[in-house]
Image (cartoon, rainbow, N blue to C red; front, side, top):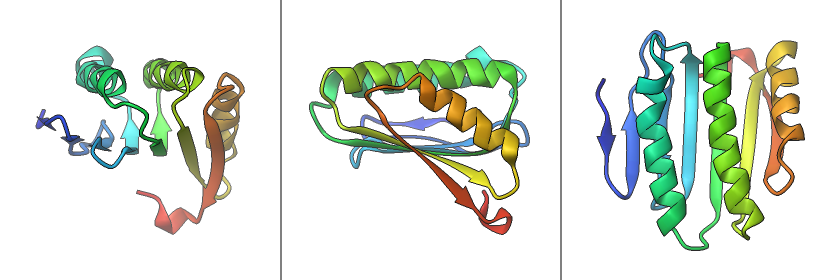
Length: 138
């Protein structure tokens, strides 16, 4: 897996089974896009969790924007996403300004509903559902 990480960014290119990860810590913009059904969820998401934890611990009060542009993910990835959202929720409950934009393709009711389900567990994070045309999806 080609992982490039610095204190300013974490970049992992997409594969057929894993999403693109583009975390620009310097700008406070985090992005996941594509599909997520890795063979080994712990191996794929482990570096993401570690980098996010380090960023949240050291980043001070800078606002964070998290853009979710996943077209599909399996149940193991859903658990990993919930872990990410819980980290963001904790930081937001401690005063960080955090927003999540959950993008879903038009007519993809299941991804819309999954976004709604995740949003119900977030009380301090600003969560926005954004419908995008199918041809604009990553």
